[in-house]
Image (cartoon, rainbow, N blue to C red; front, side, top):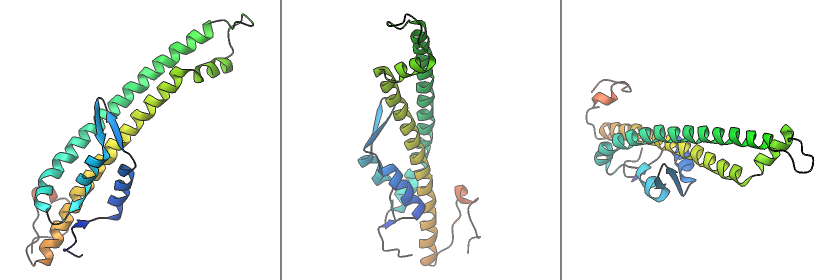
Length: 180
């Protein structure tokens, strides 16, 4: 591996970067995240591994917690939607159709519900909640991959410099050989 390169990328990491990079912004609760802020944090800069090592654990932890929070917001949105859907269904089914005076059939009630403005609004909220949960999870995975890439890069640099292979406490499970 060329140690003079400023940026080191791995195919799996690039796939996650592509996935994360396909958004301008997303929202979890009241907080809006912008891609222009997040994407530079995901790149491994081989010229500054020490400061990245210090930050990446915090980033992974933060995005793990944000992924949990996003899943919670998604679950709440789904529950609120189901409540709206059931209440609306009952209202539609109990209201006689003006032309016939009879209650609507299930198919007609479903059509009325799905063509309402509220339904479109709910679909948008559910889609946004789904996207936010997926983005937070993707960022969590991306920072975990970045941590692994930094560890790998540090090992390669130490090996190329003829230095010892250093195993830190957090890395013992993934170490493949003892210190030289």
